[in-house]
Amino acid sequence: MSKRDLYPMCAKCTKRICDMHNRLGTEPPRIEEAPPFCPMRLKPDVIKKAVAEYEREDVRELARVGSLQEAACYEWILTGIKGRMGIRTKIPRVEEVIQFARKMGYHKLGIAFCVGVEEEARILDRMLENHGFQVVSVCCKAGQFDKEIIGIKREETIGGPKGKLYYESMCSPVTQAEILNSEKVDFAIMLGLCVGHDTLFIRYCKAPMTVLAVKDRVFGHNPLAALYLSHSYYSRLALKPKE
Image (tube, rainbow, N blue to C red; front, side, top):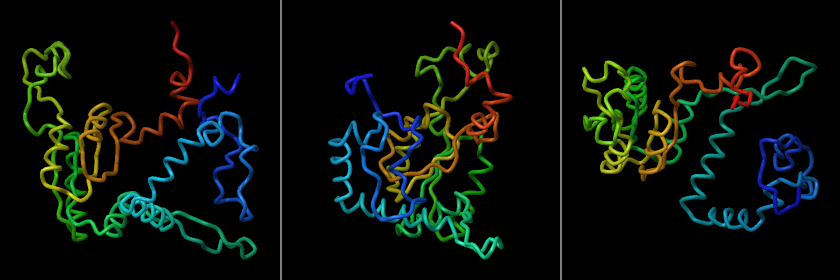
């Protein structure tokens, strides 16, 4: 394969010369040691342009605090094995969100959630308020729009064949984003939005944002479970579909 036909494929890399946190020494490996599909070899100009963005004060501060928060999620402890030190994790993601928001000086937080996780949204709302934040929350059905306005037929709704008998509101992530925009929240938290709906929310939300959880109806909102089970119960997902 010629260089012209190559494209970044980091998921296939086994050398990972870009990851230095577990290597000794102060000098990084030479770029030539990277596989030919490494973006550092294929896209140096793009990377140079991207790094220049960190010269912007707001971008640099988000990156700086994000790195501080990353480090705060680990701690070094004595392992009991010949007095050796080892590293372990200590902070769940929701606590990480709280700590990051506090480090950034955010006060007004927004939650965009799916009605399918409304109980989780109540818990999160209370948790954030107890930590001193003002919380604006918007559910996915806000606006009460009929799905027909986006071209969904009654039989194409969740109700299926019975869809003609019931009214079914559409999820409106654009509405959620615009409501949080109108409230000028400092930081938005996405909770359990569906695939596609989350895409629209990200597109329209003007505030810095993070994802606390994504929608996975089968695995209790832990979509990586399907990857962990791809060698057993969900092996069909790892196979090429039959034509």
